[in-house]
Picture: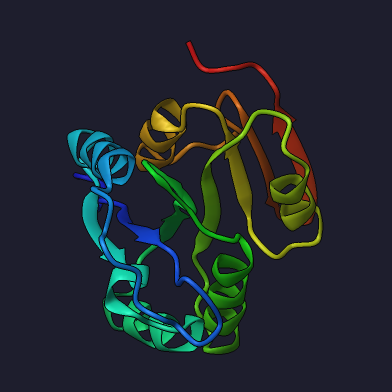
Length: 167
């Protein structure tokens, strides 16, 4: 029996709590690459550029609920665009208040960055991928049961880290 594909959503997060639109979109090259890796691994993939659409975290959460992804990767650090991780965490909090049960994390975090680590430790996000996130995305698409290289995650009440950097 064939396993059902993981529903993976890649999100360029809101620019702020109010959701002002960001122009130009600055070519979401990394997000497109990560989505391509997930699709290659057999995942069902969608992408939302909340900053370009001007969505607030609350509006984004309601839009995400319509598709019901299993896993969400927020990409606050994109080619020529850096957004605060706060709006990603706010979106996840809103999703959880709506009853969403999937996993969500921050992708492409700088190596040894403290704020993504603190977000995982405080349960604001389920995981943070440090450095190149492509190998981690591939592992998540295949249903990883232990943290892939470069990932810190919180699962079942336990904090686990694989500090090896992806090859």
